[in-house]
Length: 163
Image (cartoon, rainbow, N blue to C red; front, side, top):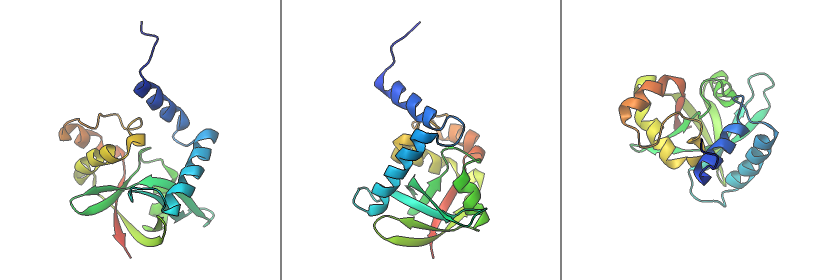
């Protein structure tokens, strides 16, 4: 029985703990607020780190969360690392895709949901550019595309179109 963990295993376990029930716990919310302030300021590089702002589906109050933007074949995408039940996914669907990205400036966007059959290469690219998400998707970033095709229906992907 192995008692010691590698640093990578410890970090992945911490990231899973922050979202243990599919939503951020108190520590996760505090970290997300700090990340949102930093990413939204535009002072941090790369530009793939931003803040998504979308109206809440119940209150209409603008909800913000830090996101990593995956680029693939000249397009930009957002991926739900927590799957279908993520609140931001439900809010985007309720807002018919209307949202805003912030990275030093505000960019009104329309988020178009990608069909599951086209998600696999985007999911693989997402894991390459979003190390924090690796603990939440059940595959290694170097897994074959066929493995990503197997899980694609469980992780919503949205193409970012500028309005």
